[in-house]
Image (cartoon, rainbow, N blue to C red):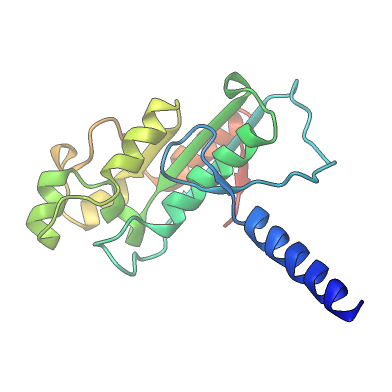
Length: 178
């Protein structure tokens, strides 16, 4: 009986561990992994419009890797899709400033400054493919001696992080603090 009980616990433990490790990429492929949650009961209203802006300004720890915070922004989008919100009901903007600015450099500029192509290029392409706005702060660009051609194609340039974010707030976006 004791062996049977132990065996059951081991099987259940293995099943629980393995099922908790299933990752999904419902919209942004290869980035922003979502843990599958088969037991969810609380779901957002799929008929509502979700508009949010995420500001990314922390210095990048490792410019040779995909930026964790940019990947996390992708995860927030994937989480909404996974929860059943249609893509057309999600408006996400990512405003990049200060120490995060290198994540939106063109491959050529990133290569000049850090001896490799931008590791965020694939993620930036996926964000744009999904209609996610990526906006860089013009003040940060000026402080870092960056020109428009130094920025990854498709990334929009604003006067500042503040003007970009306040404009989005006026358009109904909510600021998400990471």
